[in-house]
Figure 1 (cartoon, rainbow, N blue to C red):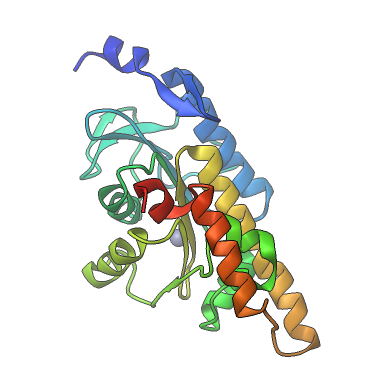
Figure 2: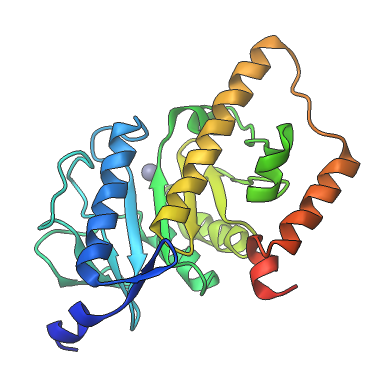
Length: 238
Ligand SMILES: [Zn+2]
């Protein structure tokens, strides 16, 4: 495939068609925001966007998300082989591929170690969207936690594949959070919402046992979610 075809390709962002350079700029913006939000340290975190023909634009390994510039993102195939660019892919790319395989609608995946969501995952506690109404509509009635597994082990990848079919964001026990969406912006916002909820949850748990909305109201909110076409079921039309 020629480089010209690649750069002429159309990608989506905020519901609009954008060029490859604009997509790359958006990938860098997301990477920078992971750092400025304090959700990654050292070389933590990674971002990918699906391109055409089984290729992906990804952040490289071994660089802080703070310093990435236009020359750093690389294009890889699903096995992580570098097709374009001079840097190396991150080892956690297998998690991203697990999501892309299970969710043809997913165009972007974002992974970070946001401190509050990660703290809950360390303690084996799921982030609870049923604390408030809006998160149930946005995320559903559950943000599941992928059970602890050795990073990138076949068992852990199998768990992520299973959850990716039914959810849009998960936490990873003793590790962090992983979100995906129609574009980079949506994936980032889901990660942001999960970290925000985790912050509220940790504060609430200082006061007493966590309280959630009445079941009947959660059911009504899930109906609203389905009617709005949100969530994997909504997008599949069922
Ligand atoms: Zn990680």
